[in-house]
Length: 394
Image (cartoon, rainbow, N blue to C red; front, side, top):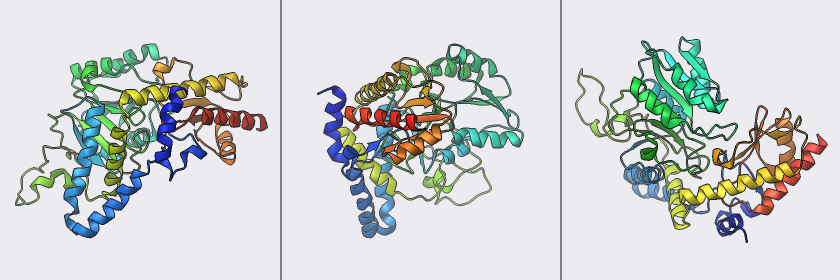
């Protein structure tokens, strides 16, 4: 038995509710299946609410701390702080509101960002924000071109570690962070497609003073409403858009005419009351991952092997490249957790694949095949056979 199947066959029985063994689920880059224990977490939350009523919050905060500790381990980041929120957008907007955009109206970013950054920045550009959108290709000069855009009017640099369309890994973060540090410019890294699939030691990479957006919807298998903003321990930002959970520890202090206070802990960028059921679900998944030995290294090895096999099977079909082709042909070491294909008929192909029982997704001309640790080789082969059939028919 090959290494892909050894791990996948071990894991699949634990995903019986999602029936992963009998379905071709290739939206792992967007929504992975949840292990069965996630359901236990949802039920546990109801029981805690029924028992403790408003005293449920202590148990809820404990679950969130389990998630924080998992992320600290993944990022080799014992001193980092992790603010929890329902979405990365809430965290991003809160963080943006900390910046001196009036006197430094320039944001340096890329043309490869997901909608959560791109849409908000474009809308703010309509209101006077200046956006320097640097093309991610050619990659050889990318770091230099980002650094060249940094000047005294720059409030922040915002960019991804793994690009959501191409699955291409940005390997220039260390040099970009160093240059930004010299100029006193903060760096925000969107790592939604990096967490749990491409290992990263924040300490070794020299990113201790960077801010990192993290989402649990994809490779973490935590589902919705489990997002975090990683920020440095000495951060003293004062977001203008702020909720009462950002000063939870000082609620009993008398109101004065002084400045708005912020807690020194993890919740500096928090909003308000939320539904903690997602944390109970995710905490069960964390426990499951640890029990199954799904370390960053094990997960990276599985994703590389699966994406490599997807790519190999795709190339063996010898598709007409004017119809569908690899988005990039860089080595697997520079590819994240999904295979990106480019086609002018990407959306039609995606719809036809769905009709044939293959779950994928499309963004414009990009078709994405995202495996997950429980996907076996024959499922990969069947998915590529279905793709060949669909492309032939279109």
